[in-house]
Amino acid sequence: MKKKSRPNTIPQALRFFTPSGEIATIWCILIAVGAYVAAFSGGYALYFAFSSGALRFAIPIGALAIGDPPTAFTAVQFVLLLFAAIPLAHLFTGRSLFSPRVSKRAAAEWGAGAALGASASAVCVALLLALDVSRLGWRLSAPRFTEHTLALAASCVLSAAGETVFFQGLVMGALRSRGRRIAGYAAAVAVAALAHGSARFPLTYLNWALCALACCLLYERTGRLSSAVGFRCAWALVASCLAGIPLTTGAVYEVYAASLYFVSGGDAGLMNGLLATVAFGAICAWLLRRIVALAKNETGRK
Image 1 (tube, rainbow, N blue to C red):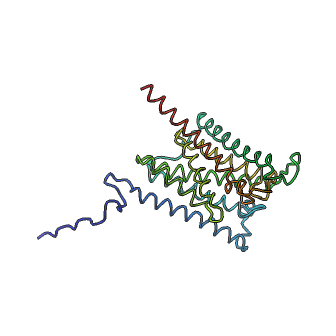
Image 2 (image 1 turned 135 degrees about the horizontal axis):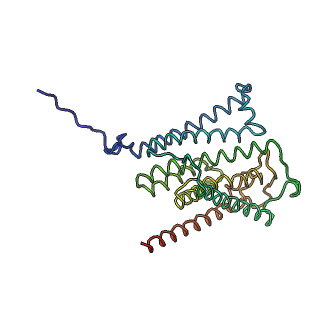
Image 3 (image 1 turned 180 degrees about the vertical axis):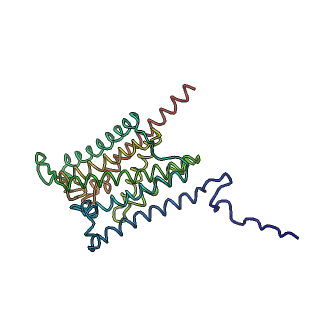
């Protein structure tokens, strides 16, 4: 007698592959979380090895860590995320995150996103100074440019780009490609909020969630990552590299909190204050309105 094959007792929801041959959504999320943890663990391991002197001989790492090693190795963490996101996106969706050709439209969208991020960050800084909530550490006519400024700018760009590509491009993009649009938004926003939130500053959870939502809406509106990456890079460059919020080695200016810390976020940075909540909330509302208007126009044409 032939032995009867035992039926597969693993629930469908927990199986690695779906009946169509795709990796199951739950496993995509778990793999992405594992990659995120691995990238951050690798960055911290490099930082502690450098701090202890084990990597002092490594000239490239030493050059990257000019002035402010923690900032530099934060960038290393997000570079690791960037390199992890590329093969994972192909594994999850069968498509590449990036096009080999940079089109004029993609460049224009990057510029539009960058203009939005830079102007929003600059307006926040200007309001803090105008209301005397924050003050300049030195005169506006005496900017400081050093080799530390270049290292800080590179760290800001790499961190913002790597994070956006991973959260919006990989996490949200993989779920959107499976028809789980709302789940894509929720996952990208939740991961960003939990990654940056601080129990000491509860507003950080909300601000990072709104920032991630703004990037998701930019991605939704254009269908490309370029505008979301431009937005995040420009916000980080203006706030950290230009204004020095939070106080960072190598910034062009130094804007420090003087009063109403709950508005400015204090020395911990804009992302911990109420002003950032208002700014990101307004940006999200404007983008959502634009997306709805475009959808109505397309429906009317049909």
